[in-house]
Image 1 (tube, protein in one colour):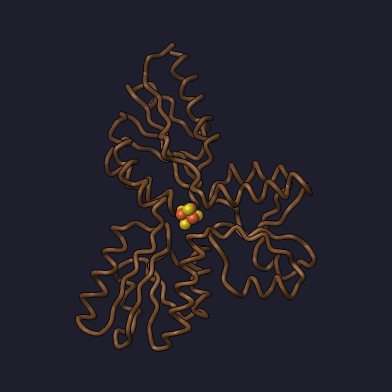
Image 2: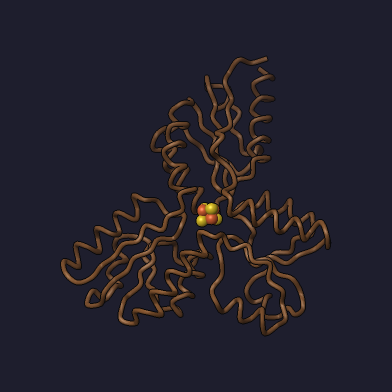
Length: 289
Ligand code: SF4
């Protein structure tokens, strides 16, 4: 038996929003054997495959328009009002798993849009990301999305500006966008609302510490996960010997054999069972030595 330390980060894995969405899906699947889900339930293909085997059918927004009299789950990222309209028109029953944190942000954006017609709403987030599409929908498509500092050139600085953030962005990134807007708008109203989810923000310092505690870090995540990319980059800054893998089949055995301690961590969309599989595989490699 090898005495090399192999540890799973206890702060990694599904956030409460994802846990609830999967629980809601499994409740229907256990009772009825099938359920539609609008978009991947979680940005992790391994978990999507597991639920597919239980009867979860992932559909697109175009598919939704063609369906009638079925149940459709809306995932934690939330949806724009147009999705609810289509569902009502097609007699679709919605199982709404929008995360309460996202829901609250949607409501704040809608309120700003409805009450302050001349205010320019700006969202710091990833263009085209499902959550961002749901947020922009609250402003009837009028909010401007900025991904990077150069994007603030799209804003008309003559208006009052209110900035919100996609829930999974980094605090550092939001601060950079805030400073960029402030430097171009020395006067007039500008509000920055930190709407980053603490499930993500609070994980960062803990995960940075975890990354420094191990010689090799295996970061388990789907490449579709924006939260995964952020956390991975943070780990890598602390420990350059950090590698992203999608499952145990991606493990580089040579790296594992060279390390004196191995840390396994992941995104808010990484299932615990997958991190456990990685741990078992690492232990098998070490035992073969
Ligand atoms: S990261 Fe936060 S906001 Fe996003 S689904 Fe999870 S708990 Fe909700």
